[in-house]
Length: 136
Image (cartoon, rainbow, N blue to C red; front, side, top):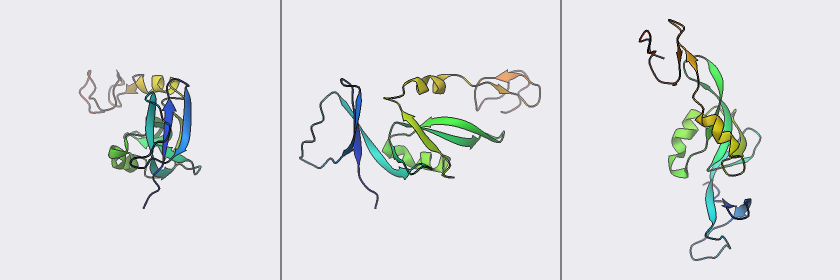
């Protein structure tokens, strides 16, 4: 059975509080202006606890060989898809969406992919080339 832990981001103080134990009917001193994140039960390659909303760096193969990627750990209810994607255990935490919002900009940038057949540049991971129709 995995350990149940939480952390909270205080939006007003711009500060993360870790090591929270939330129990039914108990007060933990978390204000209305806080965002709660749950521990996933996973650790990164350095043994650091992984929480919802953490940024991770990992290698992923989109059919062109392994390439570095950055992702956000999803809500605990969607963790099984995340675990399947990064199952090799070589990933590491590089921040979280609250303390490192600049990393969100990297995730939002369109990535350029080059068609292997005609050399045209495409801008989505899963599209077909608009010039020759070759699947990505």
